[in-house]
Image (cartoon, rainbow, N blue to C red; front, top):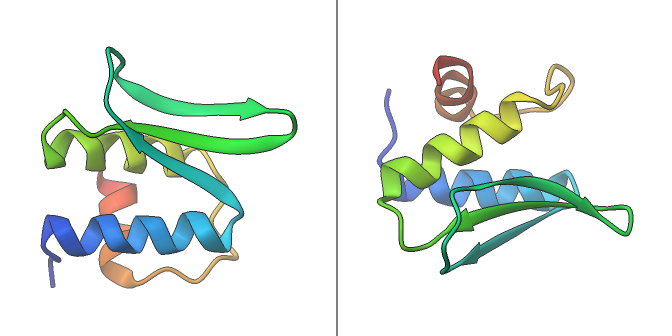
Length: 83
């Protein structure tokens, strides 16, 4: 069952919280991605980009993390693995 984009954003926010990753959604001249600042992990998403593009950034960045031992809602796991 595919989730709506708005539901996927909420799932990504909850996942970031569980993994102690700061999810920053802001406006600016950037594409988005992950970074490490003072030993804190961040994923930055551009709020000006379309929702689908923001989801792709989140899927790409969470796809770089080993999530094998992390429970994910099946729709979220398939979205990350399919991106």
